[in-house]
Amino acid sequence: MDKIPMTAAGYAVLESELKQRQSVERPRIIEQITEARTHGDLSENAEYHAAKEQQSLNEGRIAELEDKLARAEVIDVAKLSGDTVKFGATVTLIDEDTEKKAVWQIVGEPEADAKAGRISITSPLARALIGKKKGASVEVVTPGGAKAYEVTKVEWR
Image 1 (spheres, rainbow, N blue to C red):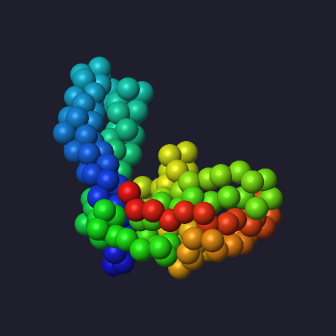
Image 2 (image 1 turned 120 degrees about the vertical axis):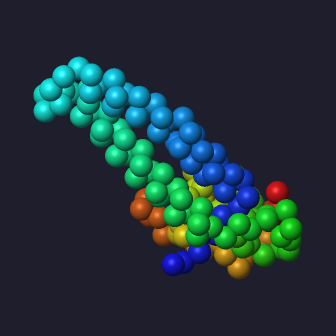
Protein backbone atom coordinates (compact mmCIF):
# COMPACT_ATOMS: atom_id res chain seq x y z
CA MET A 1 0.00 0.00 0.00
CA ASP A 2 1.69 3.19 -1.19
CA LYS A 3 1.47 6.37 0.84
CA ILE A 4 -0.30 9.30 -0.82
CA PRO A 5 1.45 12.63 -0.18
CA MET A 6 -0.89 15.54 0.50
CA THR A 7 -0.95 18.88 2.24
CA ALA A 8 -2.78 19.41 5.53
CA ALA A 9 -5.38 21.51 3.67
CA GLY A 10 -5.97 18.73 1.13
CA TYR A 11 -6.37 16.19 3.93
CA ALA A 12 -8.92 18.44 5.67
CA VAL A 13 -10.97 18.77 2.47
CA LEU A 14 -11.12 14.99 1.99
CA GLU A 15 -11.97 14.48 5.68
CA SER A 16 -14.77 17.05 5.42
CA GLU A 17 -16.22 15.37 2.33
CA LEU A 18 -16.11 11.98 4.08
CA LYS A 19 -17.98 13.33 7.13
CA GLN A 20 -20.58 14.99 4.85
CA ARG A 21 -21.17 11.76 2.94
CA GLN A 22 -21.40 9.63 6.10
CA SER A 23 -23.49 11.90 8.30
CA VAL A 24 -25.68 13.75 5.77
CA GLU A 25 -25.82 11.92 2.44
CA ARG A 26 -26.04 8.35 3.80
CA PRO A 27 -29.08 9.01 6.07
CA ARG A 28 -30.78 11.08 3.33
CA ILE A 29 -30.40 8.25 0.82
CA ILE A 30 -31.63 5.65 3.33
CA GLU A 31 -34.68 7.85 3.90
CA GLN A 32 -35.30 7.98 0.13
CA ILE A 33 -35.07 4.17 -0.11
CA THR A 34 -37.49 3.75 2.81
CA GLU A 35 -39.90 6.23 1.22
CA ALA A 36 -39.68 4.51 -2.19
CA ARG A 37 -40.37 1.09 -0.63
CA THR A 38 -43.76 2.31 0.56
CA HIS A 39 -44.80 2.91 -3.06
CA GLY A 40 -45.31 -0.77 -3.73
CA ASP A 41 -43.78 -3.20 -6.24
CA LEU A 42 -39.98 -2.73 -6.16
CA SER A 43 -39.36 -4.31 -9.58
CA GLU A 44 -41.07 -1.40 -11.36
CA ASN A 45 -40.27 1.34 -8.85
CA ALA A 46 -38.00 3.92 -10.54
CA GLU A 47 -37.59 5.98 -7.33
CA TYR A 48 -36.35 2.91 -5.47
CA HIS A 49 -33.84 1.97 -8.19
CA ALA A 50 -32.57 5.57 -8.44
CA ALA A 51 -32.10 5.75 -4.66
CA LYS A 52 -30.27 2.39 -4.63
CA GLU A 53 -27.99 3.64 -7.45
CA GLN A 54 -27.31 6.82 -5.47
CA GLN A 55 -26.55 4.72 -2.40
CA SER A 56 -24.09 2.60 -4.38
CA LEU A 57 -22.26 5.66 -5.72
CA ASN A 58 -22.14 7.28 -2.28
CA GLU A 59 -20.82 4.13 -0.57
CA GLY A 60 -18.19 3.75 -3.31
CA ARG A 61 -16.98 7.32 -2.79
CA ILE A 62 -16.93 6.78 1.01
CA ALA A 63 -14.73 3.71 0.55
CA GLU A 64 -12.45 5.65 -1.82
CA LEU A 65 -12.12 8.55 0.65
CA GLU A 66 -11.45 6.21 3.58
CA ASP A 67 -8.70 4.51 1.56
CA LYS A 68 -7.06 7.81 0.57
CA LEU A 69 -7.20 9.14 4.13
CA ALA A 70 -5.78 5.90 5.53
CA ARG A 71 -2.85 6.04 3.10
CA ALA A 72 -2.32 9.81 3.41
CA GLU A 73 1.11 11.12 4.29
CA VAL A 74 0.35 14.66 5.43
CA ILE A 75 3.18 17.07 4.72
CA ASP A 76 3.10 20.44 6.49
CA VAL A 77 4.13 22.89 3.78
CA ALA A 78 4.65 25.66 6.36
CA LYS A 79 7.62 23.72 7.76
CA LEU A 80 9.27 23.37 4.35
CA SER A 81 11.76 25.82 2.94
CA GLY A 82 14.56 26.16 0.45
CA ASP A 83 15.04 27.41 -3.06
CA THR A 84 14.60 24.05 -4.81
CA VAL A 85 11.20 22.98 -6.16
CA LYS A 86 9.73 20.01 -4.29
CA PHE A 87 6.35 18.82 -2.98
CA GLY A 88 4.31 21.70 -1.54
CA ALA A 89 6.24 24.47 -3.27
CA THR A 90 4.39 27.31 -4.97
CA VAL A 91 6.22 28.02 -8.21
CA THR A 92 5.90 31.09 -10.42
CA LEU A 93 6.67 30.38 -14.08
CA ILE A 94 6.97 32.49 -17.20
CA ASP A 95 6.06 30.85 -20.51
CA GLU A 96 9.13 31.52 -22.68
CA ASP A 97 7.02 31.74 -25.86
CA THR A 98 4.10 33.93 -24.73
CA GLU A 99 5.64 35.64 -21.67
CA LYS A 100 2.50 34.62 -19.71
CA LYS A 101 2.95 34.20 -15.96
CA ALA A 102 1.56 31.12 -14.19
CA VAL A 103 1.60 30.21 -10.49
CA TRP A 104 1.28 26.55 -9.45
CA GLN A 105 1.43 24.76 -6.12
CA ILE A 106 2.65 21.17 -6.30
CA VAL A 107 0.30 18.95 -4.27
CA GLY A 108 -0.81 15.33 -3.95
CA GLU A 109 -3.05 13.71 -6.58
CA PRO A 110 -6.31 13.75 -4.55
CA GLU A 111 -6.15 17.53 -4.04
CA ALA A 112 -4.97 18.61 -7.50
CA ASP A 113 -7.20 21.26 -9.08
CA ALA A 114 -5.79 23.13 -12.08
CA LYS A 115 -8.46 25.85 -11.86
CA ALA A 116 -7.34 26.61 -8.30
CA GLY A 117 -3.63 26.60 -9.24
CA ARG A 118 -2.77 23.21 -7.72
CA ILE A 119 -1.12 20.54 -9.85
CA SER A 120 -0.45 16.93 -8.96
CA ILE A 121 3.08 15.84 -8.08
CA THR A 122 2.64 13.18 -10.79
CA SER A 123 1.77 15.65 -13.58
CA PRO A 124 4.30 16.15 -16.39
CA LEU A 125 4.86 19.81 -15.41
CA ALA A 126 5.44 19.01 -11.72
CA ARG A 127 7.80 16.16 -12.58
CA ALA A 128 9.80 18.51 -14.81
CA LEU A 129 9.93 21.19 -12.07
CA ILE A 130 11.07 18.96 -9.18
CA GLY A 131 14.66 19.74 -8.24
CA LYS A 132 14.83 23.01 -10.23
CA LYS A 133 15.76 26.39 -8.75
CA LYS A 134 14.84 30.00 -9.47
CA GLY A 135 16.17 31.02 -12.89
CA ALA A 136 16.10 27.48 -14.29
CA SER A 137 14.56 26.78 -17.66
CA VAL A 138 12.20 23.82 -17.91
CA GLU A 139 10.87 22.09 -21.01
CA VAL A 140 7.67 20.07 -20.70
CA VAL A 141 6.05 17.86 -23.31
CA THR A 142 2.31 18.50 -23.11
CA PRO A 143 -0.56 17.14 -25.23
CA GLY A 144 -0.43 20.47 -27.11
CA GLY A 145 3.30 20.12 -27.84
CA ALA A 146 6.52 21.07 -26.06
CA LYS A 147 6.45 24.13 -23.79
CA ALA A 148 9.37 26.00 -22.24
CA TYR A 149 9.10 27.81 -18.91
CA GLU A 150 11.44 29.83 -16.75
CA VAL A 151 11.17 29.43 -12.97
CA THR A 152 10.99 32.97 -11.55
CA LYS A 153 10.03 32.25 -7.94
CA VAL A 154 9.88 29.31 -5.51
CA GLU A 155 7.94 29.96 -2.29
CA TRP A 156 6.35 28.09 0.59
CA ARG A 157 2.84 29.07 1.67
